[in-house]
Figure 1 (cartoon, protein in one colour):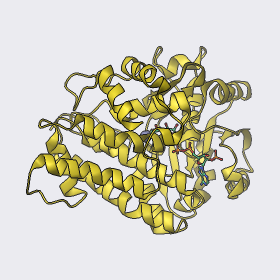
Figure 2: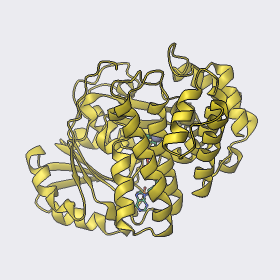
Figure 3: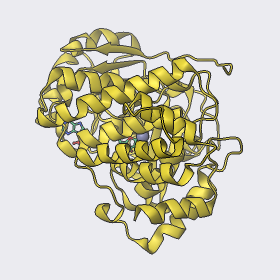
Length: 389
Ligand code: NZQ
Ligand code: ZN
């Protein structure tokens, strides 16, 4: 068991109608609120009007139109400008992970005099940030319970994870009812993303049974309830189980006492989204089986056998390499059963920029970290991308 130091300061308020507590949560944080949201889903589901009504005693400014794969040059820069000009006290993010991630970057930038991008890439440390509250409408990223946000800069094909302890939300409202309207594509992508968060932490050189148990339970839960939510989008229990599981995917809980990981599948996916603006969870569903096949060896097979026996119910008796292979097949079949794309071509990516992306990933993502589960060179990354074509 490795040493650890863990703190998640975020308050979670979970369940039907919990949004009624919004004014009470916002009051101590300030009077001037920046309400952030995406392309309009919150207006279509009536949540925008509900929030405005709940906040009628506050002064509310707005930043709408935040893109999936939120963009620095448009949304982040604009949000920082509003915060500074209007002396915003607190940001309220209402939407999916993209809106919240963008809000986190805005929160950091609002308290910094220089270029926000320098905070995002870690060139300068983040010393302060505006407080953030969120109402999640999509279960996937775990951003509601973590200190990170992923920001895209399309001009340079960069998609960068901005992580700092100041970016933990103060409070996250999690009402599964708000996820009823998430369509099949984004429901499946959200589940694939959350499963992948778990896998990134499960595949490590040194684990422990508590961490393994957390991971295996979360994957089993997501696999059980995803088909139910797809068949019946307003099934409260299914949406609730998925939302609960997603929330714990990214905040470090699953890797306490383990050797950790450089998150290789995410490192690869960030380039796919950075270059082609694809849906994050779909990119992961495509890459995951190919990463698994690429790194499977006699040295790494034990983790695959463990996943196969504890999650897919495979028998532990038999050739470990055979069981590991079946585990990978079952994982891919599960994503396929959700109707997800399984090749890069299906999401509009051809072979023309694979080498360029492999180089970008190798330079920027640190996937060759010595001592990690399966360090990846540029050639390894290219080989995974080619296999996924
Ligand atoms: O923009 P609107 O109109 O709101 O529509 C969104 C968007 O089109 C829609 N949507 C959200 N809630 C809805 C809904 N549609 C109907 N009903 C609802 N209730 O869904 C679409 C996708 O939304 P988005 O926020 O982009 O999805 P997600 O939550 O999966 O976030 C993806 C982003 O998070 C990053 C990804 O890289 C990607 O940029 N990640 C953030 C992480 C973190 N902060 O810890 C970790 C992850 O690994 C991930 O990288
Ligand atoms: Zn992810």
